[in-house]
Structures are given as C-alpha cells and as structure tokens.
Image (cartoon, rainbow, N blue to C red):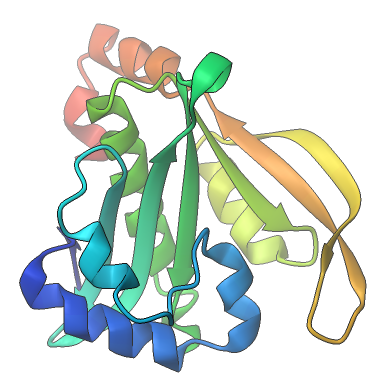
Length: 175
C-alpha cells in the first residue's frame, strides 16, 4: 500500500472508491464526492492537499488537508476515509501521517479532525499520533435514520511537534 498525491491517473480509481464506501462514510467528506466533476475539479488545486492510499490498482483510502480561512488560516481540517475492508490495517494511520506532513508543507501549525464519538478505534489512532481532544459537540451529527450522535474535535499542534522532533534529530520519523 502506497500513499500518493491525487493525480489525473488516480481520479477514476478515486471515484470508484467513493462509490464503494458506505453512504454513512460520506459525512466525512466536505463535498458531494459523487457529483459529476468534483474529483476532476480537485486536480488543479494547490492549497488543499489530497492524497489516496492505493493497493495495486485499487484506492483503499482518501485524505484531504483543507486549510481554513480568515482568523483560522493557520489551521487545517483533516478528512480521512478508509475502505471498510481495509480498516484496522494501518491505512488510516498512513493517511493521517501523510496529512500531518502535508499540513506542515502548507505552513499550518494546527490540524483538527472531527470524529463521531462512537468511532473509538479512529479516536485511539488519532490520539496515538499526538491528537488531543479539544471539544465535544453533543448531538452534532444526524445520521441518515435521523439519530443524533456526539462529535469530538481532536487537534494536533503540528508545528510544535515538528520542532521537537527536529531538536531531537527525529524529523525523518514521520516520513
């Protein structure tokens, strides 16, 4: 499994991935990823960073680093979705690490990720990468059946972590 930046060659496999993942996972996307032209529209972007996890010819995961604007322009939102058949195999971790590095390349000092409280394995994975809970939003997510769920916002101060790793001579550890 490799993590690669989104490219023209990976656009069709990414669209196949979006059609394959459960509809409940579509809440993780900032856009309507099934709408015609959405993925093609991303190809010329430079500020948001998007990448895919690919196994052979199949996309098994997606990550987007979406920089915020205005007074939060130092913050990036991390969006990750992993194929249900490959969850628990390190794909999400690889995508999250890639996203953290992309955030640094964009000059972001803080990354945030929103996770439904019920997704305990995902929360544990993010915490193991240095994310810390910052907010609990009660009844913030409504699923397709109308049921409400709590949402936790986890944050990672990437700039501080990177500085500490560089000081210790470990800056290549995330690469």
